[in-house]
Image (cartoon, rainbow, N blue to C red; front, side, top):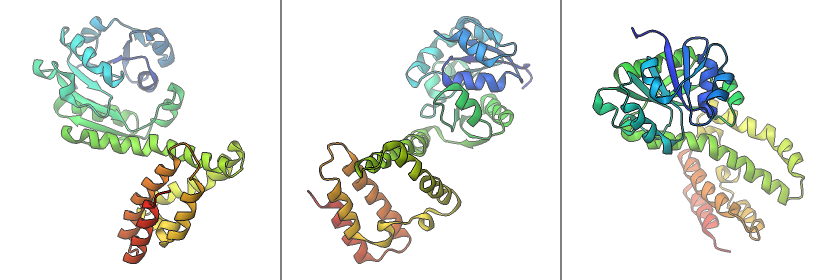
Amino acid sequence: MGRGRTLGIVGGGNVGQALGRLLAPEFALRIASRSRTREAAAFAGGDAETCALEDLADASDCIVIAVPDSSVAAVAFSLSEHNPRVVLQTCGALGPSDLSPLPEQGVSCATFHPLQTFPHPTAGVRALPGSAFGVCGSGEAAAWCRRLARILGGTTVHIAEERLPLYHAAAVVASNCTIGLVDAASRLMEMSGVDRAEGRRALRPLIEASMGNALTMNTEQALTGPVARGDAATVRRHLDAMRNDSGPLRELYRAFGHYLLTVAIRRGLAPEDAVALRLSLNEEP
């Protein structure tokens, strides 16, 4: 890199705090945040220092913007008045052009998105090492992304800027939608008369085994259940049993049934079974 080992982080939220804690041993760390600067510096530990945003550019060889998507443009604009050297940002749906006007000023910019979930900083510190990082950018900024990923024991996947929304949608489905599916399964257990906590404990081995299969086999092999078997009658019974639910469970089951049907067809489901399943999934109350 040729500019020393000083890293600036903008943002004192969960992502900024986790990155600060993990990177503090490797860099002279400076942190700027609108409201949580001291908290983030204390969590990072070591010799992490607090710093005003306007002083961060001169003090840092690389700046990582770790703020919500809606705040990235404002931070980039503020930094553009102070000649930063390299600027990365951690929002997976945004690219280097979203850091305007920095790229137009010749600042090397990139997206450095941790492909991980951060419900709180300590969980992020545990989960982040070894994770993948979505990278969009080139030149010195991309080199910084690779350097930081190596320090964190992770890997990088390079995404073209116009495809970042699809990449980020994949992350949302893998993370947030998984949480939603566990919640939906727990709700159905509760509707069946099983205590919610007991139901979650009972479902856990099934969830873990299914996830393990999905990640170690191809998905066509991993798929089991009534859609994989072409069992339209069971699917219809499931939907009938959810008829009186006032929430979106029934429509969620339908939507996933249709998607799973495409997986089952890829693995060789008989055409007549596919037709019967589609009719069951589309059947109105």
